[in-house]
Image (cartoon, rainbow, N blue to C red; front, side):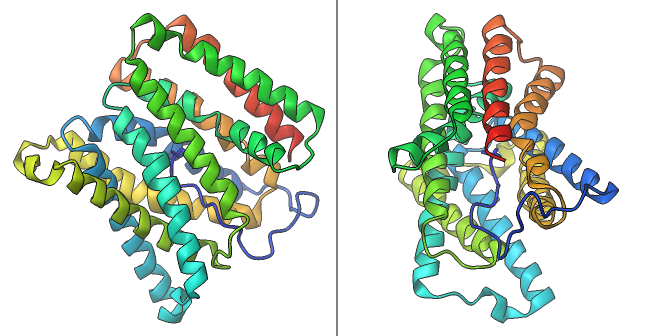
Length: 314
């Protein structure tokens, strides 16, 4: 997911408020551009990867490699002790990692065998809306404009399901993506309430390792390794998988973590409605994915609803 799919979910230590944030510098805009383009392009890369690589096996390879690389980088810069966490923190990070990367991202990977990458990105864009509903379900008050944004976004989600209802896209695949957004939202919601590691990068190491192991377990249950033949994997799928590991799970994540400390938070949050636009454009440009009226109209409504929520909740 982006989600989007590699976004940090634990709170970095001592996050400053939006009012205390400095004005965006040139470096901040460059980092934001990386998050916009790279996270938006991960849906395209997933689509290309699963053309010849089994879905759960590709997710396992992506997150295990990314988690180990991030752990090595942190150890090299700050020493191995930076990875030390308590048992409770480790358990919380593992649970969140399973919900986000197996339940959330893993289901998106599975669904993109039949769902166009741009449409998947637009469906994933409703994640902030589910989070608001979860907050209200637990008794938290939300502004009226936030509720309106959620209502608008859910209308857009309904319009987006038209291709599945009409048979243009497999409805089961679209419902799988919607299920993935619910799991991702639930994991994000829990991450702020569990005893997570104080360092967001360290938390992400354990989330990615847990998610990678969980995806590997599912791959084994599905018998994916026995049917996997490396020689049958296309060059494009290998390149796309490498791109997901290096750019999607390391470079863009590091840029996002840096932005949380060096740019206004409302500006950083704009990735939530820029990523799906980038994904739709790249899917149309590089994979010739059709831009039907439900995708264009529903996508515009969803992005508008998310924009309203982000601006109200800044």
